[in-house]
Length: 408
Ligand code: SF4
Image 1 (tube, helix red, strand yellow):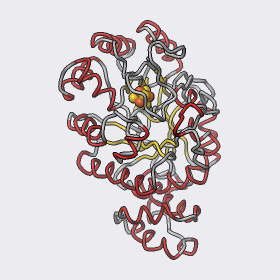
Image 2: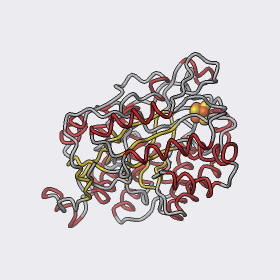
Image 3: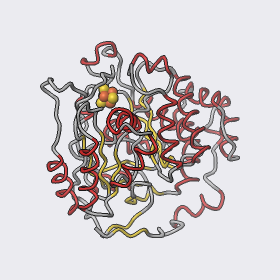
């Protein structure tokens, strides 16, 4: 698979005005209470957590979109990206039972699954001719898989194609491996995984950082400090990662703002986050205590994306996870701060086991069409959001992949 990093045509003809002066803020369309925040954004000043709450409290979605769009355009011009990737959920067997999770199983459960290394290697082998640039792999906190299993899996995937980026394991999986399986410090565990082929760690498992919320939706899971520390360690080793937020369950808007604050703070420290990927909670009857929660509305999802774009001034990219939003809403989100539609994805399991009714894959043609129709320039990206010219996936081709995942 030949991948060439290219200097993309810069600036795009229609973006030249934005480059000279930035997108102008149309203050006539911004209500009085949001103008001081809009002025800060236009002046490239950082907004506060209180400002984020003011933004979360507004129902003026158009105004939020205008402000978020200024940040998006400043950071990403008119480009909107997608990745050509293959998701693998190697097993849903997990020692935890997070209250929001419909994916995990105990070994005895009928819906428990566990793929053999040969099966995973075959799935990725089948995906490579389609031009995928990344395999994205997460699973439950498996009680019995051995250290050698994980290392062998990474080495065999690496051997398939040295250029294939292996993005794998959430921070909680890394802690699980370090403490229970490898019995090594986090840094040493990450080092050994990297030597075997790990390219980057995933952003899942962050949920909402507040400890009281965590105790109710994912009791026993790592704390915010522990999640952040895994990413801090990975970044200090020169690694990059994404970050996430699972919202729309029992958290308050203040909890969301606090979550964003902690992400921004770590990013100030390390600069290692490439993109932010918020997910709305997918309600299902199987969640028991969370069963009565209504799915976040389209309005709420767009508002959350826009506020995130405005607040996270030090994270360059904002991804709309179409598996959760649906492609039509993800397309609309390109006008609310989003500059990335994630990936082509096949056989998504985590959200669909929770009841998501979106498709399990998209074609490159569908993603590019959605981006173009929204007035943006589609560009394929790599795992670190860098523009690439691959040699070259054919538009319209379906990519195997499963989804970025909130699990674990
Ligand atoms: S969210 Fe992750 S850690 Fe929690 S039960 Fe599901 S698979 Fe296990």
